[in-house]
Structures are given as C-alpha cells and as structure tokens.
Image 1 (cartoon, one colour):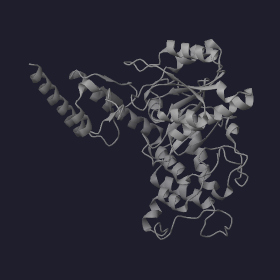
Image 2 (image 1 turned 30 degrees about the horizontal axis):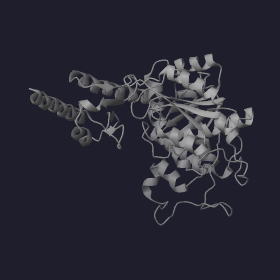
Image 3 (image 1 turned 180 degrees about the vertical axis):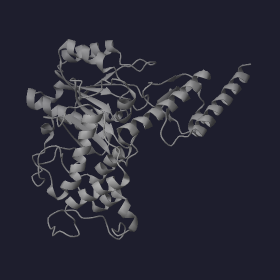
Length: 417
C-alpha cells in the first residue's frame, strides 16, 4: 500500500481543476440535462469560504455521477470529477486490496447496504445468463452475524437464503453446518451459490475464516461466486492485519464492499463497490438509453461530491498516515480490553478490529445505555452490548466508563456478601 499524502493546497488545486473540466451549469448553454446547481438562495456560490473548501464547491456544483466510470462511456458533462472517482476506485482496488492494475471496476454507492445488494443482483443475473439458472436454483449463503442487508437483498431479489450458525464464543462459522446446509440445498434443487464472507461483522467485529470456508466449498466442487462484506472492516483490517487474505490476490474473491462513512469519517452516501472486470455487464440497464454508457448501478444518479470527499480524505492522510491512525485506534481498543480483562468482564473482540462486544450479563443496562453502547437486539433481552472505538473517543471517557464498571462490580460483590 503506497499512495501519497497531499497538502491541502494540492488537494484544492486538483479538485478545482476537475471542476473546471466539468461543464458549468452557470456558463454553458445546457438545455437538455434535468438537473442544475444547488439552489442559489441557500447555497450561494460566491461564499468566500468556498475558495478553500473543495468538497463544498463540488457539492454546490452538483455533478451527477450516474453510471460506472471505470467502464467505457460516461456523461461527458462531468468528466473532471468522474476522473477523481476512477482514481479513487483504482486506489481502493489496487492499493488497499492489492488488485492488478486496471483489472477492477466499481463505483461510489449510497452505502454498504446498496453495495451488498449490488453484488447479489449481479451474481443472480450472472447465473441466469451464463448457466440458464432459474431463480429457485440460486441461494445466498451468509452467517447469522451478517449485516441485515443480506436479508434485505434476498427478499428483494427473491433468492433463497441459507443462514449459517456461528460459534457463540468465537463467532466463527460452524463448518459442519455449512457443509450440511450445502448438501441439503443441493438435494432440494439449489445449483448455484452466492457466498458472503464478512471482513468484520457489524455487531462483533468478527472476521469470517475465508480460507476454511472456501476450502470446503472447493472440495464440494459447487458453482459459486464470493462477495466480501468489508463495509466496516475494509478501511481497518487491510491496515491492521499482517498478510490479510481479504484481497483481490485471493482468486476466490470476486467483489468487495467497503464503506467510507464509518472509519474514514466521510459523509453518508460513500459506500464503495469493487468487482473484478467482466462482471458489471450483468447489471447493465439497457433501458437507460439516454445515459451515455448506460447505467450499471443500483442507485442510478448519485453525487460526485461524495467521491471527491473519499478521495480527499485518503490523500490528506496518505497510506502511511492512515496506517498510523488505524494502529492508534487498534492500540486503544486493546487497552480497553486489558482493563475489561482485569475486571473479569467477558467480551468478544477480533484483535485486528476496533469493536468490543461485552457479555450482557457482565454490565448493567444503566451503564451500557449511559455510554450509548449498542445491544445486539432492541426487541429481545440483549446478550451483548457493543463498544466501537472511534476517533471521537477520548481516554478520559474510557477511564470514566471503566470506573463505572468497577463501581458496578463492587456493588455486586457487596450484594453477594
């Protein structure tokens, strides 16, 4: 991983040049585009602070990045900022996930949910077109700890869900359950499988053992395509884990979801979908005749400013700066875990992720809610409460939290006595 850290002046210049390559609504004789700049009564373009605010300048200019720009053919009106998005996709695919140069496609989506559903949609169509598969012959395989977007996707696309059990303590997929459910599905007429692997689950931060899972799948010689949901872990695990197998060097992986609005601190609407070349064609919308190059995305129109925001943040830090930032968060998470261990509080934590799931029996609801911990269920009695060590968390707040847990333990001991 090696991309440069740029100065704020360099970033501003780069984005300004990109905007200048876009066609300006205020200056060009644009008659046919059903859009314009943001309402000038509210978002006025001559605000002095915009001179040094490239993201806000892009937001007000309102470029529409409809389509997938790593493919040939896009709306030429916004070619300047589209080039920023192409650079961003290549940086993520090639630098972070070690893909071969210009061998991946992708786009900035509305979030991880859309990117995950994009993958399911794409593989469903792939199996239909390449294998003449029926809908009832395609299943989506994912663990019970997976993000709810997988449930949403199977519902929307009318695909069969296969939900795998996990070990309650290690959060690992139970391979015997995977094996038996695949065998049973084959008996019931399932012939094609969309496999979802998690590079950090939302609740636990657990990372699925992709090596063991794919070894089993390959031994069974089934037909499958594998998608990685790294919406949370994508901008963490690649920097904290030595020799990660969650890269495009792993030939079992075809697509990856990452999400900027979590760890990268970008605005909402900055999910990223990455996929190997040759697969976006399966979601090409031939009815989008008025869109140059057609549309290959689930969301269609989307703000070019979001691509600019992600590009800016990655280049503000550079690869070395981002690695250092993630290391600091991982170290702080480890420090919290050490303090929890000293108090005898049970928890789950992947050592390369900044999520800690505390056993609900070891923390009071009052303390958990005071510090806005998230339960694994709002509808049932929680089994776990989640801490996410994010950049806004200070050591002072952590010390206060730990002291509350100490007081809670003392009270419990006095009651027992």
